[in-house]
Amino acid sequence: MNTMDLSNKAASVRKKLGGDASSPIDIFALIQNIPEITMTLYPLGSNISGICVKNKSSSILIVNSGMSIGRQRFTLAHELYHYYFDENTLSTVCPTQIDTGDSKEREADHFASYVLIPQQALYELLQSRKQNQKQKVTLEDILFLEQYFKVSRKAMLFRLQQEKELTRNEALHLQTNVISSAARLGYDVSLYKPLDAHNQKQTLGYYVKSAEKLLENNLISTGRYEEYLVDAFREDIVFGEEVHEGEYVD
Image (cartoon, rainbow, N blue to C red):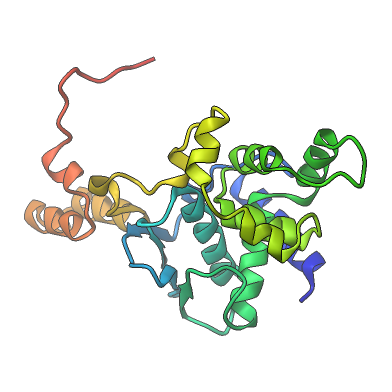
């Protein structure tokens, strides 16, 4: 596996989406810069992390919303690899286990890690927290890094193993008590939890915008427009959000 090539590809995609070379990115927001992408959040069970289905005119990326928010971000970055670089495959179903499966799945995992955790930024943060080169990464360091880059514990441990900062056995030991350890050190624990149940089914991007354009151009009826949106789990657009205290404009 050519990790340098994957790192360069990740950097190019970050730039294409509007991110800089080293800062944490909001992958869910930046993906809106790809006009032909539809992104769907849907609980896919315990064995599937995401799905990529490509078409000439538009493509859909599906993320398992039953997983933690940190893992969803990793999955979305993973699916971007299939979208941009997996040229011979039109549809891919991706497993939940990181660094497993065929070569393309493993490449996509490394690519996702580089997209969310740029090499230079990780190196500089690690150096700033170490007293010397031989000092081992601590649990506090790991919590800081995963909160900074907004990734799951497993995604962070995967990357630190690749960087030879942790052994496999050390990483396995650190996979437990994730939420409680974050809470005890004063961190917000929402990163380690899935979305609320009523937000786990959503569709964003191309599909929703296309339905709106069809309605505006009188190519579909209001009834058909609403059917399309309900099929895409966007009842909020059809029926309106319940607002008890009004909207805040800051």
